[in-house]
Amino acid sequence: MKANHRWLQQMAKLGLLLMIGASMNAEAGFLGFGGTSWKEEVLLHDGSKIIATRTVERGGRHEIGQEPPIKEQSLSFLMPSTNQKIVWEDKFAVDVGSANFNLMLLDVVKGTPYLVVTPAGCLSYNKWGRPNPPYVIFKYSGKEWERISLPLLPVEIKTPNLLQGSPDHEAEKAGGSVVSAAFIKTHHDEYRQPEYKSILQEALPARELCPQYSSGPKPPIPIMPSTSTK
Image (cartoon, rainbow, N blue to C red; front, side, top):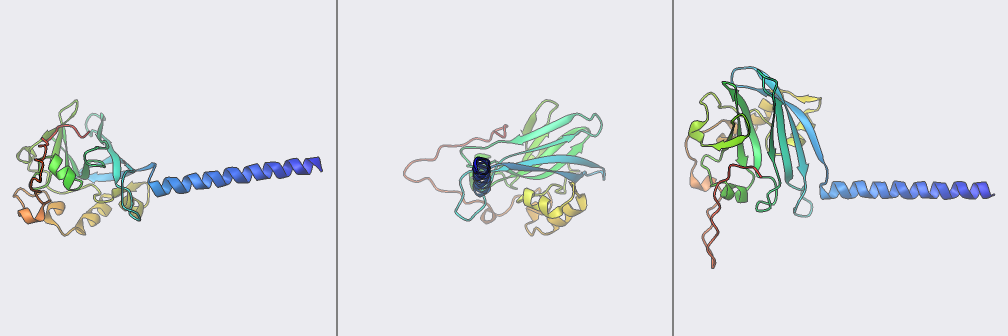
């Protein structure tokens, strides 16, 4: 009888632990904790390809029933000629309430990596100086990523080659260990806005961009563009 009693106690404890674990997993999924990672086959302007590793962590404020925004993200790859590992990170920004950007394009010209991103929402768009066309461009100088203006982007760089929008969900749709360049091209073909299908050089009409809010009772604090993604 004592042995049976001890066995029942152990089973009850095990059941309690399983219930706690299930509850924690459900809560984590509901709140958007945790992250995911995947690899993308990136087609460069010269026809060569590199493999980029991307990570996304979702979290932060969001409407009930909606998915949390991307809180943090990163992209890393090996330089084709040197095998040097290069990492780009987009950390949580308090003033935006999420990460700053949506990734769009990665390319390498004459041994120099370039990354083209778009602001993630109007708060980010205002923070980064309301660029028009709406691109924020980074160049890897050899030690760190530096922001450059659109005219300094090499003319060879024209075609988006990274998953945009909700890249973690698109990667899940693709399946497999690496998202192919062909799948990424199909993904971009679905976009209607020309600024997301290729790199534009001319400004868009103001009505197609985030509205420029007028100053209310209190003048807005000017936000200057930053060279850091933090």
